Image 1: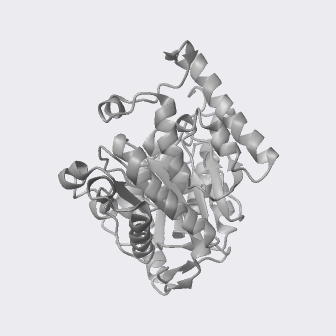
Image 2: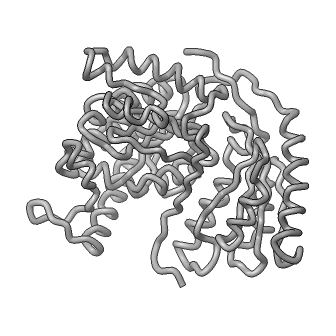
Image 3: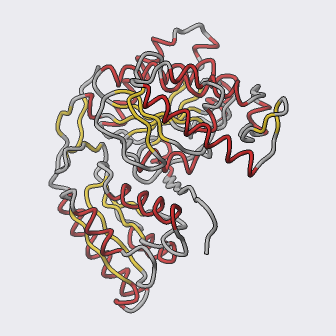
Length: 393
C-alpha cells in the first residue's frame, strides 16, 4: 500500500482535507454563509434546510448532523453563523465543537446588524483561520486512519457486476489494515439479511441490523404501498435502475451490499449521522438510499473518504468529504468523463480481474487522500441533504 499522509487532529482523528468550514446554524443564513466563504481558497460552506421549526427526533437528528459535521476530521476550523432567533443555538453548538480542540468562532446576524456587517466580520475571521491552518502540514499516517464510506447511485447492471465488487475488495483491504468502512442505504440491503447477519461480530449487532431493516420495511408499508408478490417494499427501484437492467429490490440489494466487501466483520450499527466507533471493520449506518442524504450521513458519521459507484453517471459531491466517483460502464465512463474519477469497465469489457482493478483503485484512493482533487471537488459540487423525520412546524 502506498504511503498515506493526513492532518492529525487534537482529538486523535485524522483528516485528509484541512478546510475552514462556514456553517449556518439555520437555513435562514445559508446565503450569508456562502457570501462569507465565497472566493476564499481553503474555505467551504454548508447549505442545509434545518435549524428551526423542528421537534423531537427530527430536531435531535438535525442537531447531531450539524455537530458531527463540525467535528469532522477533514475540518480544521469552524465559523458558526447564526441568525439569532433559531432553535439551534449557535453558541452552544460552537462550544460542543470546540471541545474537540479545533478553533471555533460564532457570529450572529441579528446582533451584528444585518447581512453586510455579518459578511465583513465573517471574512475577517476566516482569513485568520486560513492563515492559522496554513501552518499545519501533512504527516505520514497509518492506513487505519481511513474511514471509508461506500455508496452507490444511478446503478445499472455494471454496478452489481464490476464497480460494487471492486469497491468491496478495497473496503476489505482498508479493514484488514486496521481501518473502517461504512455501508449504508438501508433500503438497499432488504432481502440480504441472512448474508449480512452471518458477518456480524455478535448476535447483538446482528439483531440491531435486522431491526433497522425491519423498521425501514414497516415505514414503507405505512408510506408507500408498492407491492412485490403481495408484500409492500420501499419503492427504491428508479426508472434509471430499470433501464439499466435492475428490476427488483432484492436484485439491487445483492449488488449494493458487495460494496461492503466479503471478509470484514460487521462490528457495529449506528443511526443516521451518528459517529462510528473506533473498532476496525465494517460498520452499518441506517440511512435512506437517496444519494445527497446518504452521503451527508456518511460524512457526518466520520467518513473522511467516500467511494461512490454509478453505472448511469452522477456528478454529486460533498463540501467536507471527497466523493470519488467510480463506474463499471464504459459508455458512462466515456460520456461523463468529466465527472468520473475511476473507470473499472475493463472487468466486463476486457476480462480484467476484480483484484487487479481493486489494487489500482486503492492507489487512486490514497492519491485523493494525499491531496489530489476529485472531479466533484474540481467542479465545486457541495451537495448536502439531511434526512428529515416527521413534520416541519
